[in-house]
Length: 189
Ligand SMILES: Cc1cc2nc3c(=O)[nH]c(=O)nc-3n(C[C@H](O)[C@H](O)[C@H](O)COP(=O)(O)O)c2cc1C
Image 1 (spheres, rainbow, N blue to C red):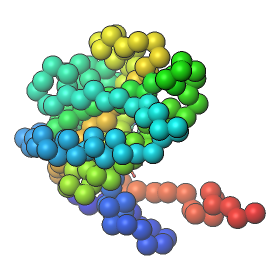
Image 2: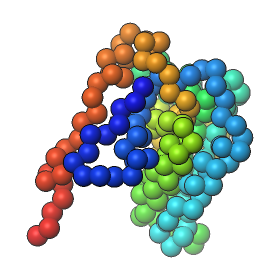
Image 3: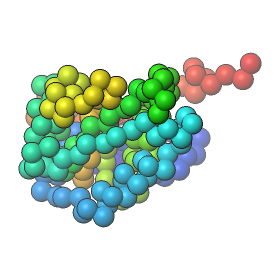
């Protein structure tokens, strides 16, 4: 399904086409070279002091890491995310290489995922980010040090028809995408 943004001003077609589906094709796999390009796109994101505070742990549908990540999701996300081809966790290092607090680490990790999302769209993939997961479960499962924080789980895959979703999700999938008016958040004085 397409849910291209109804923009007030023209934007790149990749940005307009991107949206967050919940219906993923559970038969398709993402070729490894495409997975490599997604993380390469994240790698070249800008970050404060070029600290690159992100790490990614990914699982492919059917493997052990995918199951571990699935198990960390809240019930609502478990209704749909296990159909995706790939799930990954974004981990952020809250410390600089000198051991000080890096106030930009979450911002930088989000920017890296944004780059990855554009690359994914270019390759016909869709990305759905989730805050609905247990960071504690991820920290425990992957034995993370205290300074490495699980920030978000991301589903990636090829979109499928909305009709195959859990009945509670179909209306959400078909609902129009909405945004604030530009005048509500852009200021010039
Ligand atoms: C940080 C973050 C957390 C999110 N968490 C969830 C989630 O747990 N479950 C879910 O179904 N969608 C989640 N979303 C998806 C948003 O609801 C979605 O991006 C937003 O409604 C805008 O829709 P669009 O991406 O299709 O434009 C999350 C998105 C972001 C960026």
